[in-house]
Every structure is written in C-alpha cells, then in structure tokens.
Length: 294
Image 1 (cartoon, rainbow, N blue to C red):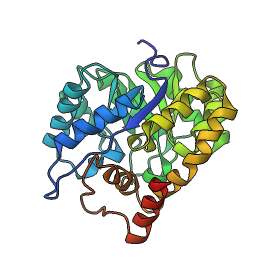
Image 2 (spheres, rainbow, N blue to C red):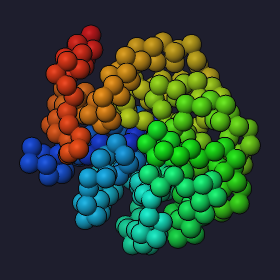
Image 3 (cartoon, rainbow, N blue to C red):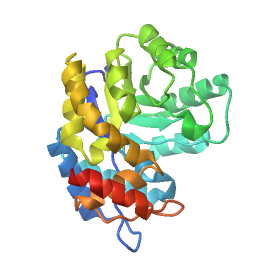
C-alpha cells in the first residue's frame, strides 16, 4: 500500500451537497462548488461525508454524486469517498459494489449510535479494510458517533491492518492527538477534523485538515494551512484569527447549515437542506451577512 501522506497533505474539503428548492440534488451548483474550491487551492476533495448530508441521500443518489464528482474533478485533485455507518455487513457490500476505481481512498466514520467497545471498533475497521479496494482512512468524531476511537486503538489499526492508511481525527483531546502523532507508523496520514484546531494540531505534527470552512472560504483557509505546514505560524495565525468568527458562525447551530448559509450568500448554491436539518435562524443568518460584508 502506498502512503497517502504526500497526495493528501494540506487541505481536503468535505463537500456540501447542494439541493434545489424541491430538494433534488443540484448538480449544476455542485459543479460550481467543485470548481470554486479547486480554484481556491484545496489539495483534495471528500465527497459523501457528513457535511454532504449523506444520511439523507439514498444509495442511487450517492452513486450519482460520486460519479459526477469524478467527472467534474477530472483528475485535477484526488477524490476521497465517504462510506461509513454502523452496519458492518452492509458497509462491506457497499465497498465491494460502489464505484471506487477513481477514488484515492475511502473515509469511514466510526459506527454511530451502537457504541461498540474498542475491540468492536478494531474488528469493524479490520473487516472494512479487508473488503475495501482502496485504502481506508479512519474518521474519529465522537461528538457525532457517541464513542471515541482511542489513540491505542488507532495505533493498533495502523500497525496491524495493512489497508488502514490514516485518520481524520475530530476530537478536541489534544493529548490523544499527540499520542497518535508520537506512535504512528511513518507512512500513516493524520489530519485534523476541526477547522478551529487545525493550526495548533499541524504545529504538533498533523499533515493537514479535512475542512468544512474551505467550502466557503477556500483561498484564505488553504493559504493558512499551507503556511502552517511550512512552519510560518505567525503569518498563519494572522489569517486564522480573522477566520475564528467564521468557524463559530458555521458551527453555532448545525453543520452544514452554517457553511451553506455562507455559500448561498456568495451565490454558489441555494440555501436548501433536507430534513431533519433546516437553514440557520434569522438572527444567525444576519450575523453571517454582517461577517461577509466586513
């Protein structure tokens, strides 16, 4: 297995899924967003992640979105596909049948709701790695799944399971992040899953970030990440300081409601989400507009 630490270094963007007012997928808008983030400097794209409202997409929509993304990206940057859930058997079927020939890797969030033990998490990811035709990136997001993938389990997977290539670490436990960075194999990719913590986590040794904010503010955000990776932390901090309010607004009520509001105000998409998600409240929408006007 080849290392992903070079091809997926920097900023990956977890793409939103634009919808029309009738809630159909808006492929024209998706194409605009893909061009916008690539022109803005992102190093790679993640399709069908949580930010893409994937729990509300049916299987055929997921396949169509993945195929359209490959076509639109046209090999300009790598594409990572999100395939996660809490039914291991069904995920194995998805990995065996989903169009992954043009994907660089698969990003798989830990099982939600089930709250498996650490051994259960290890066996779940091991089964996915054996079935997957592409390298697996672990995705630890305990705020959504209800269970933390510990540093010890992450390192065990990295060292014992051949097709486990990296992790998107979305915990705010910096001690856990530092342990993973200390003990990881040399070729094991570690990226931040939290825009607001990306700069300090890169300072600790992470290889970049999979970002929500880069959907709406790609040029500023990617430059900040590149500066951080070069060790230019004073310059990166100056940009990041101006983005902190944006991060807060994007996640104040819900993701991706926040970032979609930013993007709608830029004219990239229509501000439509599928239930159970709804657009931002009027008060927060006004704050986004005021931030964008600065």
